[in-house]
Image (cartoon, rainbow, N blue to C red; front, side, top):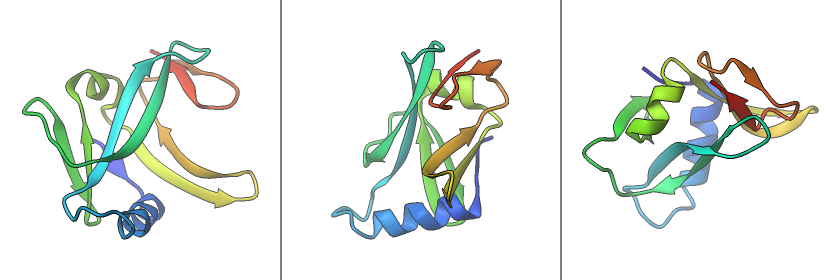
Length: 107
């Protein structure tokens, strides 16, 4: 399971409105790197692999590859637009530690 907050869903829908393809969705990846070992990558895509995990919540489709899902299972995608910063973030229950800026993590 992977969750999407209402604010994140609203922002994804707003951004997808500018995309050329009606089949586009948000893809989330975990990649090696960052100061804690792994970091997150997000972007729009329109191709699904048979091993991908597909989640639909609040009319938003999020796709996560098999490797990344092992590190993100049970997580929640959030969006913040407050004074402390704007952007997407992931509450990841599998992360044992994260860097100060929150862009990388350790499992």
